[in-house]
Length: 441
Image (cartoon, rainbow, N blue to C red; front, side, top):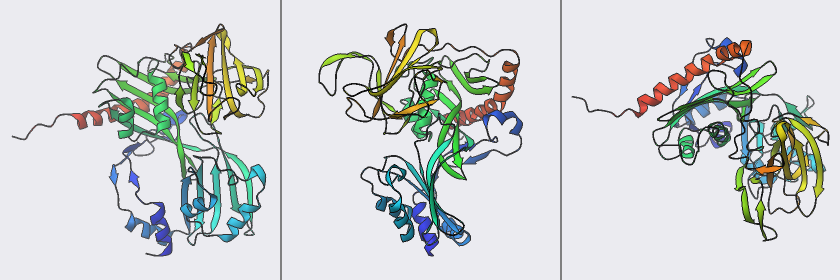
């Protein structure tokens, strides 16, 4: 095998194609317009030997594309080796980038890195992405690239992205998490599924064996490269005695989740304003991890890597922005309508422009996860109050949105029609796969 083929073999080693339905529309807002333009493509699940394809691709390609994520105890040398970089001029250039500009001077676990290389391992361009999650409306990254004279240059950049809708379906055999893994649904999408279902289901009690579900979500791409998953666009969950539907809709001055009749089933407040795992729950008596004292924990702790984006839980106005060394570290508070306030603590830094008096929208970037103040590790402490009394944001009923009416309701029904047909097809496939087989006579 030639050199290029060898590199590609390393890059594509153990590739698995997951069962997925590539939908025939480019974005949610153009669902009905693009419905008939592109045929539906089904990808079969299973391990595929790519060696023949790799040799063919390598002989036809001038460039090689590789990616990795920053791992614990990584060094820039290890990362470059994983990417297949063999470029002394590039490694020398990276060492000349000074201070906070250089993402390899202080490696942040989990960051996505993508490289475009020559078949000889020389760098054409390399991108280190800032944390990306479903709320992001654009993508920020640090890029090193060659100019037209063949000299390296670097810059911080922000870009939009393409969103390819993907559909998947699953059946509950024991719990929702297992079913999502078996359906190859990414963790970021599973979190959004739980957010949608939690308005009508107790996920620890009401999810039963035999329940089925179908979802449509975004797969994001930049310059043809996959950069992760985005927003959940639709879900239909079929339990024994009920069906739960939720579709994302963006109209003129309107956005949110609605059922098939246009009734709002969104929550006014984000239950988790960053993509994370719950590390400490709302608790009237908890032993503080730093002081060891027993005292109430009037919020939830959300563990996530340092630098993970934090978003405003709902529309409101920033009222407080402070630093507290023996407490919340960098924190801020936002006042919302209907007597609600939200608090965000232990941040590593604030987003630009966030000051007392700043008006923010639900899902707007306000800061980044950190471990400032009295914290044992990077996490967000999140509190929600109603009329001055703390409420548990993970279980409180936070549905206060308005239903769609008149022209918006009609436009919504037209917009979701192709998604409903795709989900209906997925449901028929799921039903056929789970039908008991009878012996032939």
